[in-house]
Length: 159
Image (tube, rainbow, N blue to C red; front, side, top):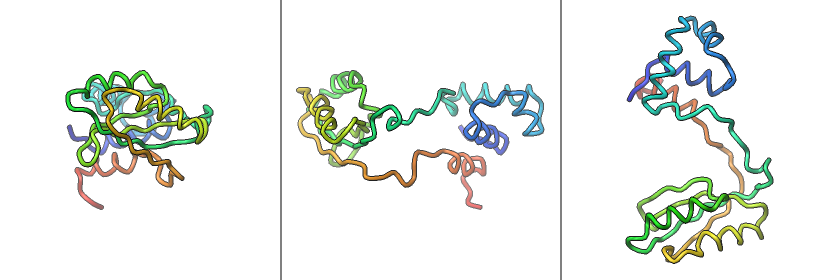
């Protein structure tokens, strides 16, 4: 599903001010409240907007260490490994991948020593054959979406 300029402006405004109401959004965008509500409903139903929850910083919760683990999975064990990893609270994301590993997961921990505990819990499952872990040193480009939204609103064309 593509988005147009108004969709892009709605998403950008929501990303910058997540607590803004529909009425205030319509006022700032210069369009009818019903138009904004209809666009939001469509963006949600099409899966473009997945939620309105708070963005939580794991470091502020006491988990300042981030790492990525590449996992090699025993053939036919993918579903079991996914279920296992879903029980580990420190696994923030899990992706199936191509290349040297089968899965890539983003982990957090309270310290480097605690990271060992998390890794042991992650790999302490029979379906995981091998794991390779890389600790994040810094995050100079944190997860961002606005530049992508702006590009998509242009129809994928560069400025």
